[in-house]
Image (cartoon, rainbow, N blue to C red; front, side, top):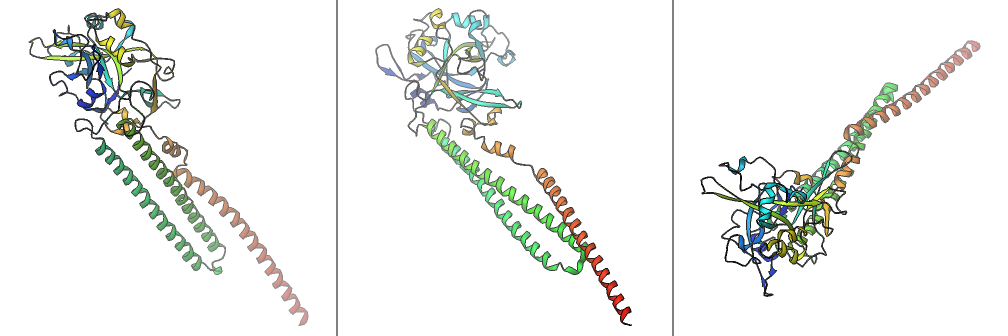
Length: 431
């Protein structure tokens, strides 16, 4: 915790959303430090070892700068300490994607950068967390700032340097249309099969005659029972397809609404999540390579989030909190440490399990998850169950009708025999 997040802004958009007020009161946008955005790639699904945009004091790179001046750069998620002397940073095997606030001033890996003032702010749209349900399956959730919190930072995700949301939306629409077309084709196929079945029923009924006797009637009943079973299966399939079609349409609408919101096309603002972090710089023993990495500081979860997880990122509220955390020249570590506390200004929604795989990178990872289709699928009877039930009912019906026919036939035969006997007696008396 936290182990996955989304950051979909392009480099210029990140600058816009990080606008801050300088000591003289004028507003400014932090600049990317010496092309620091070249390694950053926007994503709906970032995992450790990916690069992310971070805010930090310019004084870390420029000793003549004011410590309150902010800059942007990209760093790799997962702290590699400066004291690690291996020639390959990837050989550092410990998971340092998170740092507990309780051990911030105790463990050497975190204490050294903290005492040096190497504080940073990790930027993201939000982060993901998983909840294990009663059935043992894990449901992912996307967590972000409450809509009514913070400033109106409007996100424009269609920038060429960011993720091409329009192309993503077109892909989603194509998938939806493809699904709808498939459902319509299946419905047409069902109608054709239904008509064909009715035609077969009519044809078979015309071929049946009363001369077939009890055996023929049993065969007819068997045929009608099988046809009835097929019709029941077709009706069930039609209902299931209708449920799928309705859920696809609802999911398409919710996807478009949510993407429009985070694009800034709707009235609701979207505030960028600002998480407290520490960074360090690993240097190759030969001195020719530098790698900047960071860790996200976590605190006990707020009462609002304990149902989901016992930890959460240390979220900084507002421009002033961000300024104090970054300005290590004016704000001592003890004061900055007090900024690390649980946040109640968050909200969340369930998302698709697509996010479980870090290779999936599409708007479907963040949009609200439509569980209706999954619920309908779970509640709908299986094809094998339908066949078994139809077979059972058909056998019961056949048995009842067969018993009835045999009873009628035996009664008719008995009456006929009695009638024949009476006729023979009358002839004998006459002669």
